[in-house]
Amino acid sequence: MIGTGYVGLVSGTCFADIGHTVYCVDNNNDKIKKLNYGETPIYEPGLDELIKVNTRAKRLFFTSNLSEAVNKSNIIFICVGTPSKKNSKSVDLTYVLKAAKEIAKISKNRKIIVTKSTVPVGTGDLLEKKFKNKKKFDVISNPEFLREGDAIRDFRYPDRIIIGSNTVNSFKTMKNLYLPLINKGAKFFTTNRRGAELIKYASNAFLATKITFINEIANLCEKTGINIEDISLGMGSDTRIGSRFLRAGPAYGGSCFPKDTKGLIYIADKEKIELSIVKSVIKSNHNRKSLLLKRIDKILGKNLKNKKIAFLGVTFKPNTDDMRDAVSLYMIPNLHKKKAIISYYDPTGEKKEFSKLKNCFFYSDINDALKDTDLIILHTEWDEFKSLDFKTLRKKKNFIIYDLRNLYNVNQMKMNKIKYFSIGRPPTN
Ligand code: UGA
Image (tube, rainbow, N blue to C red; front, side):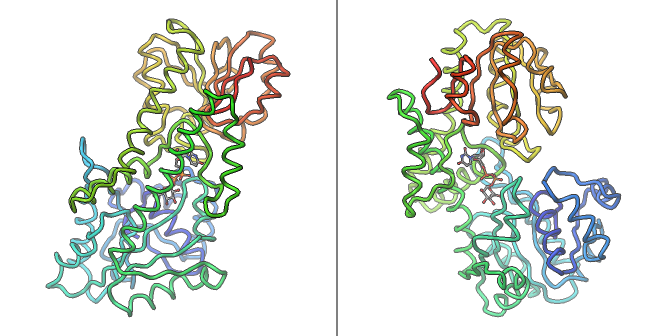
């Protein structure tokens, strides 16, 4: 596994856990050192333990020695980052190309090279062409569909395993690799290389569309006194629609949907194909963030000077410490600009992203973060927020709750006489 970021580390560890011998390589020596000391660089439930078990069993190794790892392996996964280029929709393939070049230089015999990183359609072709004269590569696309926070379960029980290859032999090798999962019922699906590359983008864009759709319907619910949860349930019960990814919320975030929707537009633009739906999704998701700020103006009044606002959770979703494209990155600086005083608590600790804001304070204790607050914004639906005792808290000072994840029960809030707003559901008064 080349790259011990989220994709490489989780997939590598899980491959070791189903019995393979795995070398996880990274050019960041410090990271490798820490991994070898048993320190996990990312927060992912269950990963620490799985790394320990598999390193102890001598199936999982961390190294900076690319040559050793490559030459001891039959299959090489490229799992390096493919970020969006700055101020552009295009995908930066620098790290992928660099990794492939190095592998080509040092590998002594024929290898299967797999792109697991999300790469634009045609990247496999590009890699093959670039290193054609070396004749050592069989380039395959095997996109990953792991969700942060649920990654280990998603690896063990995948909805599908997709292998895109232009040669038949590689399918067999890849099927063998995944056999322990296939034997347990995982669907193994083969297509050509470009097909697999596009399935990944199309899947993420479709899920982003589903979320954006329900978020817009939630806006309509707010105006018409309808409960969005009834709509999600009513729609989702139709098996053609499905209930997952129909939870209305603040706006989608994370390291994938924002980047991959833009990436898909970039791919289509190059082919002069108009993906108007995906374009609208990107725009709607962006607009949603300012919509939330307008709603706060309505809740607290336009003058936010010295108003105390507490955030519960700031990561883009629960069970991760990932801040990439979290909605809080938009909301907190904007509320701060309006001179509000921000406090926040997050189970994964303080975030460097807010360290430059003068009136933004992290508290390692929830009660301290909520003390004297005017407005509590439930930003990330961590389990530990589910049973907070707002009734007792309210005795000290009255506050309003704005629940961006519909975590709490409206009737319960009504009973506790708490002024409560959420997404697409009628407020308490
Ligand atoms: C996503 C995909 O779900 C994975 O299948 C894919 O492998 C991954 O991207 C990737 O491309 O690597 P992830 O970004 O970890 O996974 O997180 P999701 O659980 O998909 O959530 C993405 C965003 O949508 C979050 O901001 C989440 O809060 C939001 N969301 C999700 C909703 O607002 N409503 C929902 O019903 C579901």
